[in-house]
Length: 601
Ligand code: ADP
Ligand code: MG
Image 1 (spheres, protein in one colour):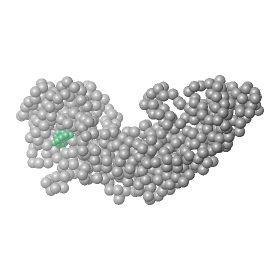
Image 2 (cartoon, protein in one colour):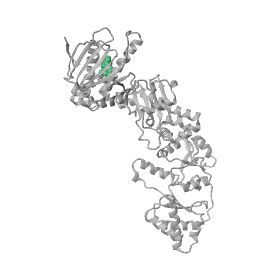
Image 3 (cartoon, protein in one colour):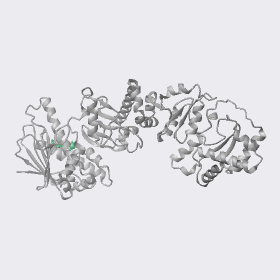
Image 4 (cartoon, helix red, strand yellow):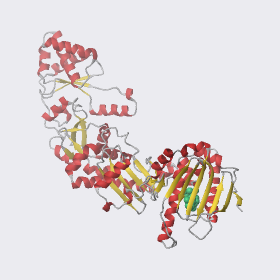
């Protein structure tokens, strides 16, 4: 005779509530039930290894079956099974008490679904998101009759003996109308692929094993070849280009962490590549949102992290404050830095060849994580316009002879657009200066960070001043103009330019420098870039100054000209040339400039 019982909880019927909260994520029922089956199988293996179970283990696999006609999904395992008493204890009491807490706590709110399941031991009950009746037929490894439990989602359950001879458990879900999509094979296959690809016990569906029970990261690094890592990468990301290198994580103290992290080729848009690390807990896929588990900049990496110590089912803020998560976080950061260090030491040339692919990632890390900055500072490379790579320290040494200003600052010059700033780069090179190529969007932030972390070291964009002045060495060049002539020139330019926002100065530069330049000082440009980055683009207009070279022959010509028309034309033409070299000449001014130039020719 079946024994009847009723579960004493405060709420009349918890299932409608569970369903309401859990519904949109209902596919996780399969993850939960298959995980339970895997757990039960692991447990019997363990008991056997400890000699607490001496019977045959048999073929230990988990089988998932769909019966479309009967509208059931059955998950079967050959795990340790349960006695009737254990069902009462583990399924009825524990889960229901969890469910009661849950109802109490979340009556009025809408919590994160994932959180409920683990937190309240509702794993098994997630079955009711897709089923309106669930049966458990189970035979324990212990000497006890097989049991049959059944519950239709009300608080009533029945439990009886069953005639199952083999050890293990069948969970039979009678799929509800709302759950009908799960009777489709493709749907089930999809869920198994997503969550169960690397479960540690074979999972069979449609007579095929759907998982790889011993994925690369659980193996010992000494047994693996490069090829294995590359093949595993392809298994994870069939569409991606080959990775540059990888790190095999293998920690068991003070926390448990395994995994493989790959460095992908990052060319541009580093945002698109995020969310490629998959987080597992004992080989069960949990999420690819690893934001809180790995430092932000490392989300650019690809691969797998597996840790039973990461509390997966708690809230965000808790996760961030969790001691283990923080330790894991800094461990991964350290490993990544170590890897860069060893690559750099072992084969500098190969490292340089990879640099263009990894610099974004390294710089991103250096900007956002001070510890990481200090760890990789020695192998962060700078590339100059000739394609020569040096470390930061090497570079300072290289340029300090010729590029130290009067305040003892070593001044590095850089271009962020070698085509547009070609003229300026040439003038700098002609002065014997070196010019760095820092042309990625991340570089403007990187430059700020490097300056902040270095003493007596500055970076200036090559077009921020005349080559004579850009590194101020306090070398005075005599002006050929008298004071009166200087004023005359200044006023002449001011009149023609006729724009009060453009301050005109007359400086005595070498006669080889441009007659006129339109410059945006480094400081002003950075302020403007910052306000752009903060979304206040319009707040800070560009500020350009006009510098007239007192010693240039054209200026002599301007002074000597008797004809006011010719004077103004000379000024206009040389000013327009300066605008042109900065890409600032446009519209009507450009058209007129071209006309004038044609006439001159
Ligand atoms: P959790 O897995 O977090 O303990 P569940 O609600 O998923 O919570 O399961 C409750 C308990 O029921 C498990 O701890 C286990 O003791 C038992 N159980 C569930 N499924 C099985 C199974 N397939 N074989 C044996 N025991 C099981
Ligand atoms: Mg479970």
